[in-house]
Length: 216
Image 1 (cartoon, rainbow, N blue to C red):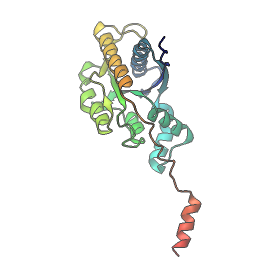
Image 2: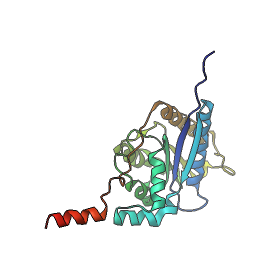
Image 3: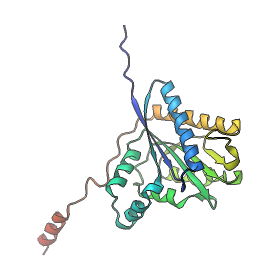
Image 4: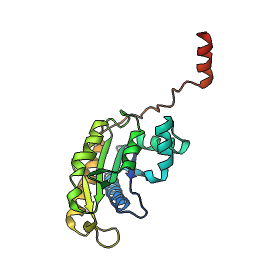
């Protein structure tokens, strides 16, 4: 009798950069996350889902940019992203690109920290004409960061939603399902090593003072 393989737990992190609560950005994020979970569970995996809203960290993000150091809360949030097996990143579209808050959140993450990370990109906007921002803005951003962006991105305009959290048309539902399946497949194929914490090697201030005295 063959021994059963232990069920693994996959960490899935979803970043929803909406500015309001509730928001269509969070709505799309939740649908993508639920569909990805369903595909992973269907393949015998456990899933640990973490949803991050950068608006809740806005002040800490600005302070991080100014000082170069995150708050304890922001450091834990970034750690969750770096330790994930897969990432869902969704932004509202303003002036043809991702929001400033979305960009700031990924600006405070080390450039190579997302290398090899399976990523599903999504975006929301008032009209369908902003959908090209997926390929002109979000995809190049994560390609620059070295992430593995799945082929299908999902854009949802205001008219794409029906009642509650259900897509009003089958095309959006199909794109959500296709993108989620691609992310689940990538998460199972890619084995990422835990990213190192850039703050682990910070030299204590007292040691810096000692070095200064030695040079006198």
